[in-house]
Length: 272
Figure (tube, rainbow, N blue to C red):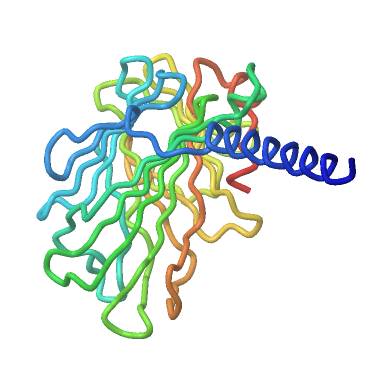
């Protein structure tokens, strides 16, 4: 009887293990159906909701660019991404895509609570065609509640210490449209051109509202409105990187039809 009980207990434990592995594989698994290549160095990615599409390109001459489409409307025109060194040159000269890894995370529940955690993720590995040892990863997440987030990770370099002066990140709005910029937690302070501002920054364009935030307890950068259509990220101090991979802060972009919806949108815990 004791032996039978032990066998039953082992079978029960084994079944529980299989159930756990099945659930785990259903939550977090590789996926390829939410992105596609539009050329050797061009990608298209969509959010679980299908309302946001991200377009990514790496050009040897133009550099790294991204744009965002919301409900069929361009919210951000092709804008720069990347890092700059102390010589005011891009960290990745002549960038090209080395490889891409896509995966999805799904909560085992339905509704708005799950939307705040469900996301599609792309890890885009980039290298310099000019200096192949210089490598960087761009980690991009599109959540089900219309939150987009990205961050840089420096993977390697030619020397033990790499001097990064700041970011090349910019956000370019559609030209020829009425674009209004605001700052503050509630997005109620109008912004004039050539103004240095802290995160978060809000703007309205093409019947949509957008909030750009820096997910850091102590902000490491701010923004500057350099014209009627452009925002640039300004790093407060340079960074000397002496360990790899070196992660930079998450940049969070939330898009909705109204400011009130954005205010009520939960920032995913996985970004905090």
